[in-house]
Amino acid sequence: AQSVTQPDIHITVSEGASLELRCNYSYGATPYLFWYVQSPGQGLQLLLKYFSGDTLVQGIKGFEAEFKRSQSSFNLRKPSVHWSDAAEYFCAVGAPGGYNKLIFGAGTRLAVHP
Amino acid sequence: KAGVTQTPRYLIKTRGQQVTLSCSPISGHRSVSWYQQTPGQGLQFLFEYFSETQRNKGNFPGRFSGRQFSNSRSEMNVSTLELGDSALYLCASSPGQDLGGYTFGSGTRLTVV
Image (cartoon, rainbow over all chains, first blue to last red; front, side):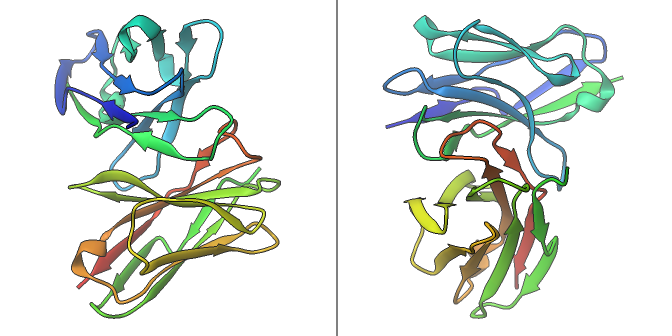
């Protein structure tokens, strides 16, 4: 069955520190991969996505993610975190050329210390 | 260009009632998907409509239903509300039959009392 695992439920970093959020997926082939961010009470904002091609993907707000097929991972990174990055982050997979349906991980809540 | 619009933003209903939520996709988008987000179950897919046809359905009871109109606007309906239906309901729209341009709305917060 298709699934997404985000091993870290909560992460706390200091402002200016680097960040890596982990995402592992289980899927029969190479899926479409997404990272979303959600602020309290808000919808989902797309940070970046991978469909094919270069495995290092650049997104908005200074985020990047790297697709590693051998590890079934799509980890999100940011070199220097800002206080405004505090939010919940979701990794998701979707089927290429299939139905418009995403399977989400449980999310990682990021807290940023000043 | 307007984004995905969900109405209402907040809703309080009583157990046993029914509720209808609305989603207006981005202009030109023909696919609308619905998701339920709860603290316990996370984000779960409800169903997807494309050109007024339901293409895919998640594992939810029959009390959850939806439809799509010819202008691509979609509604979802929940009948006989239960306390566990309290959630943030999100919709997403896409131009076609794939995930390119998939965009989420801000959601409708439903509270069942």
